[in-house]
Image 1 (cartoon, rainbow, N blue to C red):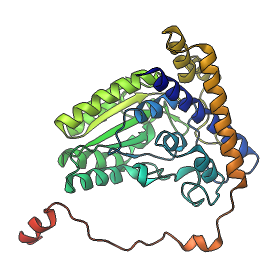
Image 2: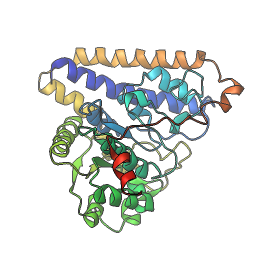
Image 3: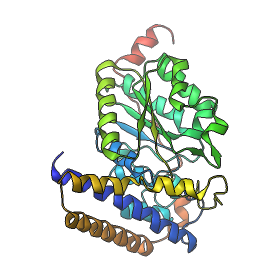
Image 4: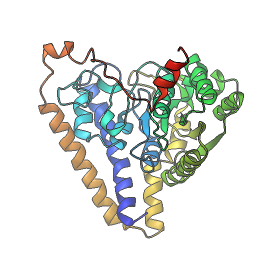
Length: 337
């Protein structure tokens, strides 16, 4: 990586952190409605994966999606506007915190129902196979809690049966809602669940952005050469509650403080300075730039108009259009299917 890439990656992580902190404040002020799931502490995962994802790679995630939206290239202004339910939001103010998406950036959401997006990821990859997009990989993000439900097992099974190019990524932040992983999962490592489907898998560190970047890049290269699905378990930690209404009585404050000592942003900053990639002053400048980006995003969002009532009836139906599947339909038509 060039020096500018290091600084941009650092600034992206800071922007995500500051967006989440401001979102928490705005939620408490009553300006953000519904649920709000913060990504604070997990920034190294989305920044690391985002830095090696190729334009043809599809990305789909669950409801803790603000960081993924920014990492996918959605302007923080439109992310903040969506949080406030404004017309200029990336989902036109109708999706809110849990339904951010931009298909032009190959970012397919933002899904509120636990694990429901996992079969959709298999479908996205199947579509790429039908259309001959041989170099495309679908990256599906989900939490540890989602691995205990049917969607997860159905998605993994189909991806292996059909040899689909899906990188299944479990962001193991230690807790599924208010329950520790060890109290809900029959195996000690989530990655072991892929063994039942004969799927290659591994566990990696998720608090160091450079480790995430390196290991995910290696796995993506392997998948492009060999094909088929792969499961990665990335160990991380959320510093805030499951959502804003979480009283956090299920974990000790000492545990949170211990993990905060491994803060991914602080760790990356220290790494950059120690390796003499950039100076502390240059990183301070990046911090200031991030603060200004977030300040402008909040100002933009608060001045954005509310959606018109008529917009409730827009984007409900879509006119079907024929899609060419590189001879697939013709072949199967001759078989009587």
